[in-house]
Image 1 (cartoon, rainbow, N blue to C red):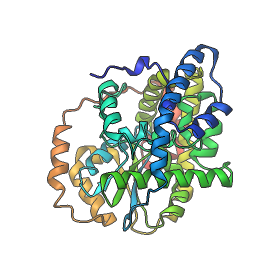
Image 2 (image 1 turned 180 degrees about the horizontal axis):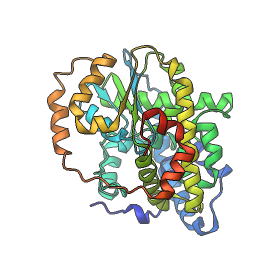
Image 3 (image 1 turned 120 degrees about the horizontal axis):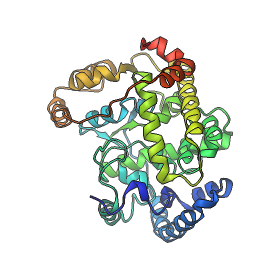
Image 4 (image 1 turned 90 degrees about the horizontal axis):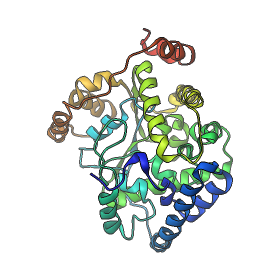
Length: 367
């Protein structure tokens, strides 16, 4: 059990941002009055940590990107579509490097002080995720958007702090429609830096990504990594909606610096799903043949090892038999994990049918 709990975090996650990102984000988006105290504490802690970040920054001047690496494998799909489970299973293959929970919090302490700050993080961080009780530790695979939000202002995840700006952040940095050429360049630069650091620190040659926001960035990722491979998760949209609302509403209570009503948040969840669905469908034809595997999470959940084998064969990810025991062992450990169960009330059915009907019909989930 960590010293801190999600429901009463004393500071915002921007403590992990470099000075340029911190100043740009806090200079353009302002906290509401009830959160002035938390914003001040965040600024004070960030000011202290920034001195350490500067040491790491000096180390970065001599950093060289790893050589002879393979293009990444991107696990994508809307939040709560099962990307975490798929990521955790595939990450048992020792050839993969990935963004860890530590890197998401301290992306600017990867080359200096990592041992000490990893220990501090292990002591103070919550031991489980707030909404589904999955275990948390600094070395676990994690989605890189949390790290990106501490590396650049060009990240959709600043909505966790400033939810009133969700629509703007969605247009610019979730589906990359309204961002400037300079913002696009910055996003790509920081995304590549994140991957290079993860591979350099782990000594691995291929990055395994899990990042739902990347669902709306297929085109941009292919511009960076033309031979990248993609695993797209499909899940019952009614379940996704209920699970996403539970996750976002509960989590944002501890991260927000602005107020947002549940009704407003429901609208934003609806719009974000539509935005990345449409962008993915618009861009997926750009993925080279043999580089995309689409699967239903329900199938993966029933037979994670069998589906992992199909993924390896379809995407030509290498010898599966050598990693089968590692993935099977993890799958057995998680077999008894108790998931949240959701009932679909009339309001949920009507909302999903009205706003996500294309996905419902395309994937055959009509109730």
